[in-house]
Length: 396
Image (cartoon, rainbow, N blue to C red; front, side):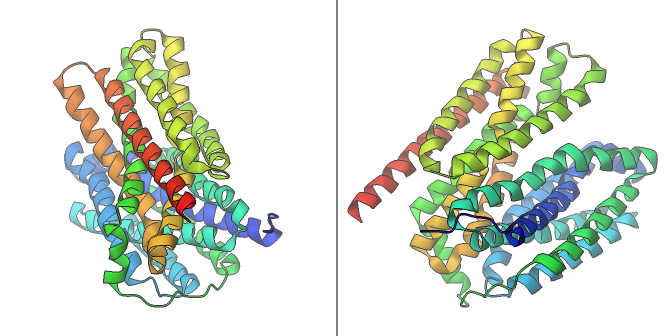
């Protein structure tokens, strides 16, 4: 019988890891809010400033699994404190940066630190909690990103409007300092896994089951971002008053907090079995936007449902990847923990690019059909994974 109670120590650790992901999320996403300030200040085009976002995502996706594999034997507490210290220094350097090239290099280094810290936070949450509460703990840790979008990014954007974009990085540096102090006092000393080679680690990626599990969140995030990337033009098409768009986007972010809470509930029991139907509902919600946006109220209700569905997959797929690694390559749980954040970045990049291609072909609202189709593919993969799990259980 597993202990299912969370002690005060457990809660302090969960809140510390959530604070950490809030800080990392604010640093990653705030760039979108201050992009035009950066481009005018550094005398570059908006498109060139946009490479600060894409370079971050690409570096995150490529470097995170490599660094996680190479450092899997490092003592987690010391390694995390070192990385948070590096995060503070990199953000402090952004405060005094006056060149696009230097800012780009700093952002790419921050992407590596961010990716590795997120993966480590997931491992700590997964390994230190009672098994029955792992889903709850990880949904909290993911919740830090949601809060970053709802609270951190708007504050960072306002600071840039009041002062300048460099001052926004003062905020992320200060938040990094708070996260360092909390982590220093709360992070436990955990045993380091036995050192294994990069080859051993990456052999995990040759397992078809792991690859299938990787593409489930990629397609799920792709489905949302094929539409979400173009939400402002969609709202303008619905004749939303310009003054209300930022309020609607805030509402979208606020609703995703509840999506995060539900994600923990879904992960608590038969997660992959439940996700099969979550993706089907997501597909219906996205496709119905094609018609509901003809009416302002129906459109807003439908967009709210889209936000509610957006991150229901996170906790379940994170735990699923770690559990599959335990079966197929127990030495590579560190690499497995990094796959979900990587998959989400791949999905975001791929979904927004696919939506962009469809948008430029003609009808903007076709992006909703593309999003729905991607959600159906995610559901099919989940059905297949669940079926293989059931077969494996019977065989065992």
